[in-house]
Length: 354
Image (tube, rainbow, N blue to C red; front, side, top):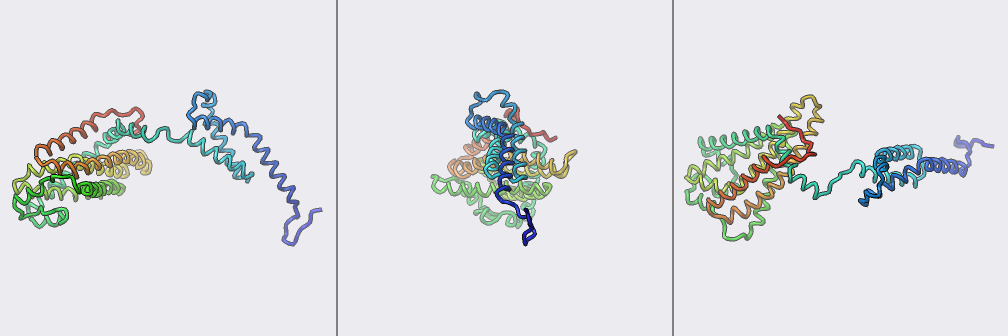
């Protein structure tokens, strides 16, 4: 006879309760075990790349079997079935999820897809933002030139002492020309190239990140950075060294400035998608733009690595204006040709922005 103990609970026979739970777990497993085993065999064959051993019917049933296993896992968690069954289902569902929804390409396949058209397609998709960023950068350069031309004190406000490196108003043409000369050896240039890459990548990442504030800070950052270039251009053109300075700058500038342009455009693309989402919600529009812009930024990192090498080595070791123009011109032709004419991958999901 069942009585009531001092704590108000019915006296229950523990062994009987455990037996009932075990029987319920066994019945649950037996009713579904065939589907679980079938799913496990398919997943194991996929993991070992043995597609030939999978029947067509089994392959078509994979999503259905996965959903059944996921449903069984949910029931097992709710009803507190035995730990062994629960652990088995969790592992099986995790493996099956990866085969149904996981990525289908490895690192090298993704890189090949990225370099052979994915990156250039994303760049072409944000052409309007590139035009806006280019206009802002040119405007910033003109502003920097005009400010210093009107008052030389602006030069010290725009160009830091470390950045100037002896290039400042009042310096003779000979002194300025000396700063454009290369070096005879490559000793110490590795550290120099690394520091330049770090600085330039910081500018690009910041220009991209600020796009989430509707793009306005990105444009201000582009203007600020380009006023520095405008000030330097005025300094060397005023000293009659404009041709030499442009050659010195072109070695890495055609790649570096292109990377900054694309980074700013990627940030503007996100900001513009949030400010003008169209028929989409702001979140969905920003998510689509963010995916596209992230691919552009991944390529900008590669461009900055190349620019760092050119700035740290080629610009220092090549001492003639003709040689420097040749390097800069070849790089500019390469980037324009790649972005303009690289074929669009068939599975590229970017949407053209107009």
